Figure (cartoon, rainbow, N blue to C red):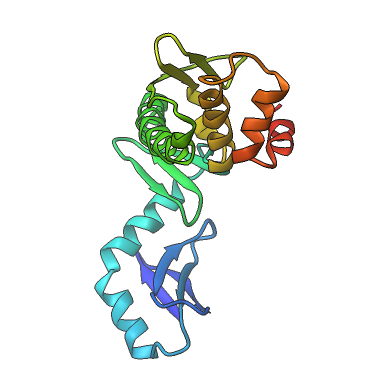
Length: 210
């Protein structure tokens, strides 16, 4: 199948998978990829394309501007950063972030770090709440040498902004590490025993994060 836009032809690839929904994407080579299941009829695909022409055209235009591209890490995945004037979007399927400038990218990652870290703190605290610890206040700061800091007297933990680049597993390990310091103030055998109670593979995670 061929799609025509602005007097140019673009190939349409139909990808059959064991999924319920149908997905439409434009890849780096400007191919239109439609991922669906074996029960979807050709007429349904044609209707999908015709009903989404503006969206497809927009995705083609965006992918044509991919020359100015850098790479960042986001939640353990490498993302292409594509700079486009007055535009922002994140495409988790194709691992791309479309953004107008570095400030907008930093604003996005700052907002995401607050959201993600708050969610993971609640999750980790619920795992450990029977240890009798308080629910701490959370701060986020860009740090060069530490992933996290605990201030037991102020009932606060500070997380490194750059943790947003790491996986959920790594973020959870750092939070549990800092929560454990509310009980054990040093890195004693008892401290690591508590950490391993909730993160049995903490040694492997530590090696990955060094």
